[in-house]
Image (cartoon, rainbow, N blue to C red; front, side):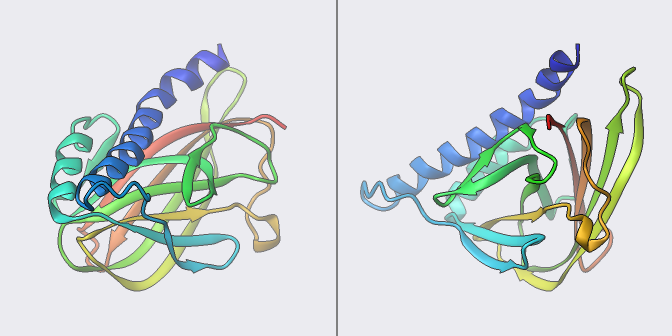
Length: 204
């Protein structure tokens, strides 16, 4: 039953991540005269427990991706100016963000991908973890607020930020089980924010 719940909750997230990565790949190639070199991820900040990065996409491609990704209000709630597309547990491998819904307690990194449609400072990202018990009842497990020091967002880029829970940084240790994560990205003005949720499972 737990696997069925995880699979249903992850379907939207998985397809969204795949769509973003594949669509941006072909859009980038098409606007660069057939050059199939995928744009690499630029890491803006990484302290080992949290990171901020970006991928450049042209204005036309941003518009098309926006129309594609904003179509499911059940999973994405956003202000008109700040849009969180998806969130997932995963890793960064060879300049790709890889979706890994089944993970281990000491190697769990949580991501959210987002963009702004106007220039604005990124204030913080808020992460709230909930854990299911054996009866699939949710209880809040841990939370983290990451300050991004008002990093100036550019509408010509897609961004991602991540959090790796670390007991050495006063995060609660992850234990085996099924989790729900709610993450919100906020601009300097508190009304400019976007929230998305996803599920993942710690298997060992």
